[in-house]
Amino acid sequence: MSSTTIEVRGGQPLLRVPARNHRMINSVVCGVSIKRHHRESNHLLSRTSGPSLGFVPTRTDASQFLRGDCNGKFGRFGGKFVPETLMSCLKDLEDEFHFVLSDHDFQEELATALKDYIGRETPLYFAGRLTEHYKNLAGTIGSGPDIYLKREDLNHCGSHKINNALAQAMIARRLGCSRVVAATGAGQHGVATAAACAKLSLECTVFMGSTDIEKQSSNVLSMKLLSAQVKAVEGTFKDASSEAIRNWVGNLDNTYYLSGTVVGPHPSPIMVREFQSVIGKETRRQANQLWGGKPDVLVACVGSGSNALGLFHEFVGDEDVRLVGVEAAGLGLDSGKHSATLAVGDVGVYHGSMSYLLQDDQGQILRPHSVGVGLEYPGVGPEISFLKETGRAEFYTATDQEAIQACMLLSRLEGIIPALEASHALAFLDKLVPTLHDGAKVVVNCSGRGDKDLDTLIQQGVLSSLC
Ligand SMILES: Cc1ncc(COP(=O)(O)O)c(C=O)c1O
Image 1 (cartoon, rainbow, N blue to C red):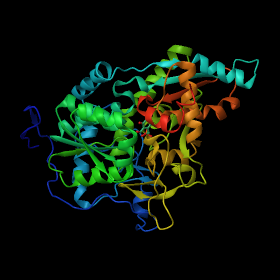
Image 2: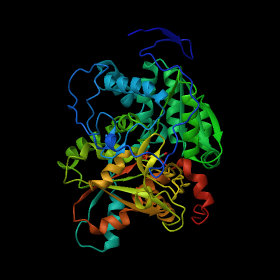
Image 3: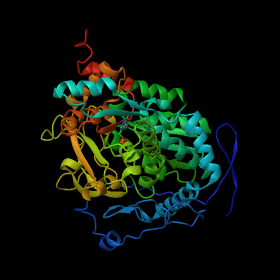
Image 4: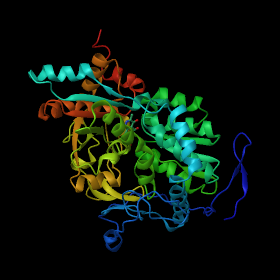
């Protein structure tokens, strides 16, 4: 393999690892509905399974994914719906990802950063007063289920996003990229990416929808403090994502697109899931220490699916563990203002892979809505679609108002202000808890902290109603 050195910000020379595609192309990885897209049936039907991890990889080894085939297919979902000119770049990334999964130096550096920089492991916290609240509500004489929170809100930068951002920034550096682009909705992924880039001396540009910039102004300031460039894009997160991808495609020679969630062309969904799976691995270990068993139910909000898969992935093979995802019903499923892709969407291709999407009859992407800005994406990751279609995970919805109430409840009872995204998962406890047996162990992924949402809560009239 040829290697050259390049200069990055701060003057630190880095080794350029694989050769990248230097050709400039103008097209973006666009949204194409299955209704308009050619039906790629052979591709969809071929599914190969590879050996599991545990051997020393080579850079050409494409067969060591834990789930999903070597083309990034989950049943009919996933894949790489990209212009041919992008294929070699994605192949380089795939090879590098395979390699680092078992590369001792990378794993050691990541483990140290997870511990000392991000602050892992995050606690599995017994929410005693919340547990008591539901017990009193039901008026049961039994003990009711026990509710635990996986405290991803305690991570550096305030959410689960940093787990993935840091690991991918390390890959970007290994690939010899001096510049990272990303898109953010709630700003959490933007802040995480900006922090990771500052730490690794990479230039960082974050694209953000103009409406989201207004709603999440504290995160915008944080990104700037972390020396990222924040570029406003007309619209919301989906528009910012398209713009970030467009920018990446035009600068392949030095730029890495750092995806914040489990969408996009292969290998992005698998890579992000893998870097987030630390959440579930810790949860298994902690549950074993705390009560000598497994959780009975795992609950997570679903925007595109990275915090949900991060928690679920470890337990997918444990049939006795229920996996519950909660989407944003916004102003109601009939209002047209929601982000409930799995509840009412159908299958199409968007941002480079096939999955459930919110789209109209012409296959045009619909604008999503949620009070939790990070849930405003008109699709979900292909693995999430696969979990729905196979019935392995259950998916429900919570409205804006239900999420706000859940946010207030947790703040009042536990002294924890959850992000409005995570509040959707918490809101579902109202419906879930009465159906569970005494002593059932429920783990809710508290995917982020809610400081960023105070302006939104003020606008919703919540704070004025308090005093
Ligand atoms: C705190 C928090 N939770 C959840 C999400 C939703 O993303 P995902 O479904 O990828 O976890 C976001 C997205 O920005 C977020 O900021």
